Image (cartoon, rainbow, N blue to C red; front, side):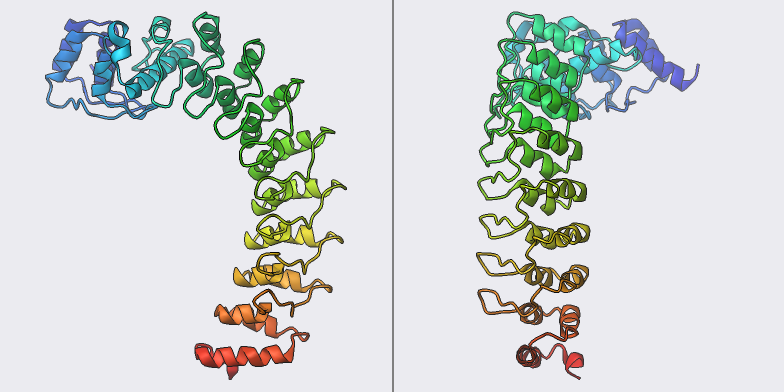
Length: 429
């Protein structure tokens, strides 16, 4: 008998809770330390089958490590599994981390059974295992319903849970997330649809960060979930969270073009809405370098491309800081963009910003604008050339000195700084 076949027979023996066959396979050379792709060993399977005799037999083997971690939902140890063997008798006494692990494993097992993967180590799991743990909470306050919708388990499991009278579909975890929040975040369209059919669900409920399910769906870019949520008349598409972000902010920050497009089609969406930091959706899109989203926003005639946030930055400042050449180029093509716009806090123009970040390509791009003033000074009295010199950016200094419209008096200041530094003697020569 091949080793592979013997190992498979060992798993089958454990699944059948057959101690005799298990002993025979081990004595014949089956490998009791093998793992599946989830990190589970035959010992895990024995514990899951709640067979104390097989567990005891395997524990007596020197090559069984009872502290071995799996790759499952919580990284629980085998010892954690042992504490859950008699879960149906003392479920409330099991530690939260173990509860979370067991619930997750139960759901995974049911999923594999329904998927026909009966040779998986954890496949012999029954729905009863899940039913006995309905009231369990993990250390994050998640119920089995939270875990089922988040992990994308079969919709039949979600239905099974929702059919129980003792299930609260609006239960919040420690972050204030309901199952609907997590389903929206995970893009679990079927679960979202099921939950929205419930009359005891508040589709606009906010978590502790002030996010509602629509925030979660837009942030993750799940277009179909966003569509479904927007069909609800009691969902406000302009609702802001505790940071002042609305769903459009969330979608633009993530660069989710189709979601942004969908939201902009709503006539009651304000594309210039500022969050508590003064950032508009255009700020978020330029900061992230999301070219297509920036392009889409700029097509809106009511978008102000020169809007400043509370730190004094315009979208052009953000794109320059991030080194997003194509976005800077796109913004500069707008005739209503002011390339000399000063940050209201420090007075830096986008050129100052590009110089500080030593982005030669963007500096060149900015210098092509005929209406750009390369001698503009900030609130410290420094123009871009002085900023480059004081920062020791030789290549930037050389580039700026090539501009014929640089003030010669500023060149003298630069020379003084260079002489003082003595680091750039080749430049003087």
